[in-house]
Image (cartoon, helix red, strand yellow):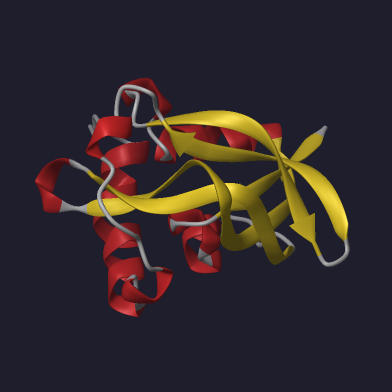
Length: 146
């Protein structure tokens, strides 16, 4: 079994997805209607993208197609679901001229009050992507190295 994932932040970068899963997934442009992208402050002064319902707004992103359930669990760890920063929810996205069901990571209810401004994907450039892969992913995926 596999699922689709709507990505609008770090998971929208192919290099990051490949570093997490070891796979290259098919992706395509997608739009999530009636949501808005914000910045969500994290410890260490970092701000990552988060989305929340906001009628009349759209979030541009990428649809990651046919994600295995094993890789979905890895995405859950990267999105740190256990911390409450994010929750995984089923959403309906537009891809080309059709609607498609997918999972998306929304801001967790306990963190909604910390949302700050817009998060612009262009501000997360190649250097930030590489830093995320080299420094953040090992901490998230392997928190207790031997």
